[in-house]
Length: 382
Image 1 (spheres, rainbow, N blue to C red):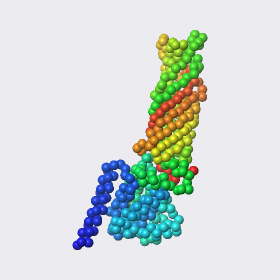
Image 2: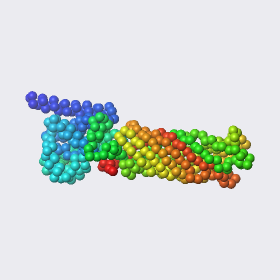
Image 3: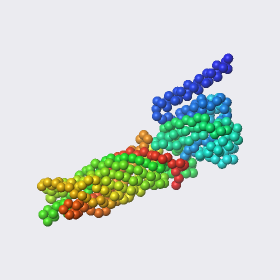
Image 4: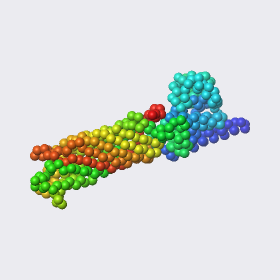
């Protein structure tokens, strides 16, 4: 009777722990790595029949120490629950040497089944720990060694905490420390930015007759800009970025201190930039340079004291360079950057003939947000 009571008490405790842990997940979006291991262990204990012989085979991860940590903690949790039979780690190490597989690497279902048979295991526990934006996804899977049927799968979103950062920072001691700081885990980054730009315009003489107004100066006005961009990671420190920027150019033409006219037009700038970028788990630094094509959006509007007129303007290529920095916030990165752009040629307008208007240089200040997609498989390398 006492034995039945103790078994019932243990099962109720495990069920309560699982429910409490699950409630914790619903109460917050992410959990620590230790809580994630506890959730995964409870899930396995509840869903596998008593006395099932299991082997914690591998956890795929970019950081081997994270894989080893999860496997050891999960194995200890299953052993201490005393409801499953866990294969001894020393037996697994012998098989691992024979099969030449890494605990942090990917293992096929066929290999897992073969190893499970050699160890006499009925169920194989494997998983993966990958970065998703600023968070991590831990997925634990149980498959039957005989049939390869999936017996259960648990996915948990993990936040970065002191334990996880310690495991990441304690990477292979033979690696150069700089490369250990790289955290470019995604192939594609998408984002949007908004900000202000300052235009600098050299007068080309087509707006007002210099024989009548010999002294002419142009004063630019600040403009509001908005952009969308996509960045494709080629290597850990190099990417290609394509962008679409809507910007306004607005300036006044003066003769001495007397205003002659105001000019305003919109354009769509399409830069293609080569980008050097360094990413850690918290910070991002980038610098880029490339060319752009500037397409007119609508017509140029010219207002003067005797009225106004509109004119078609030319499309222009140009050069752009700049840099920025970012900090991880939520699932993505907040970015602040500054860039300089210069047209290769003079803007022209078609009104009663073609007129040279001005040569344009611009200085952009922007604040934006980006998030990563398409996680890379495997670790970043030099």
